[in-house]
Image 1 (cartoon, rainbow, N blue to C red):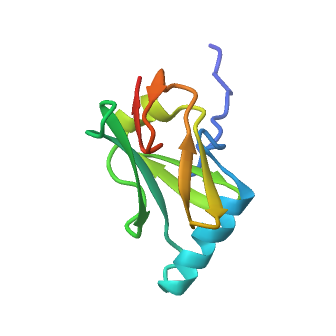
Image 2 (tube, rainbow, N blue to C red):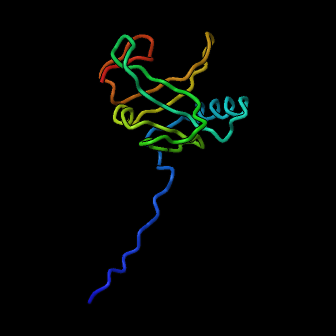
Image 3 (tube, rainbow, N blue to C red):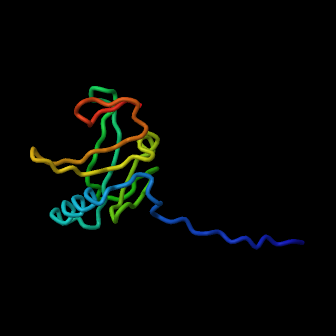
Length: 125
């Protein structure tokens, strides 16, 4: 009789970055979380129907952690949470923060977008 001696490796709670956060965005996200007293929270990145090109991006502070079916990632020290529907649209995406003379804001560079609109918040895939 042969006994299987394979050991299983525990699965990490946070996966390597599937979505990346630039240093500029990470700095701004950490500042916002600290201001809100939510330093242990993360950022939910999602896609929803709407916008002028069919889909639009969403970002929000996530205090509750991963929900059912969510994927958790970490990039530049920021926890990211992505729901199962959005994950297919966001593979390889990058969250950045751009500060210009007219104001600043978060942008998402998405290699899966086949077209975008002028506002930069809407895309088609």
